[in-house]
Figure (cartoon, rainbow, N blue to C red):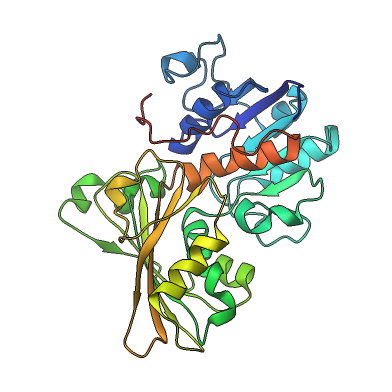
Length: 324
């Protein structure tokens, strides 16, 4: 285990994921917040917005050059898609050995970047200093499909529902509580970014139909899998249990997991296994907190792997209050 203390900066700290990152970094014995960048909160005390943080840092509005000049050991980019490139270029020019974890989709398809879904890809990590964090839906879908990948007879069909925190903080129909009340809003029903991401990573076509609902956090995905050979329910359960044995952030459960039970948890729950008569159709349900395992928690997993800390350092083992 690394005994060194590393400095870490967060770019895009105003958002929901940025707040979760501050909490996780504040609890980490080997990480020290070097800066938190937010244009909207510039000058305000971080401690006034995060009960977990006890230091004196204030939010700063930092452009790419200013972030690079900070010289942090680790930079986590929690920015909207399409905004990471300038920061990466600036850091490359000043301190290329900086560990960068990008939470956007900007580098998930770039083979020069390590794709950090540890439960599936940790064996591919070989000291890379550029890590692309998977998407929230993409994490849940891959973990739910992966144990059956060799058994598939056709494209998995994935019906997803997300809380409106997944739409970010920029106002839109998909994070407007008034429009979402008593509603389920479909969007991007073909060629969604996460559909392309999962298809590329698993090497099979995946069909994904996302929706957003009126709850704040948490996603659920119901996945229909056609199999090449008939399988029994016991065989399927054993397959998932064996594949995720020892994984602290994958919980294989008996019943179909509820999204209301996943809010504030750092793991993915996979269950509700149902085999149709004939044994060639399987339905699986996966839930996760999109702000945690779908973003901030996974980023900390990747930082821990890269810096030599135990993978779940600072990640709570059980559900905690989102304001804790």
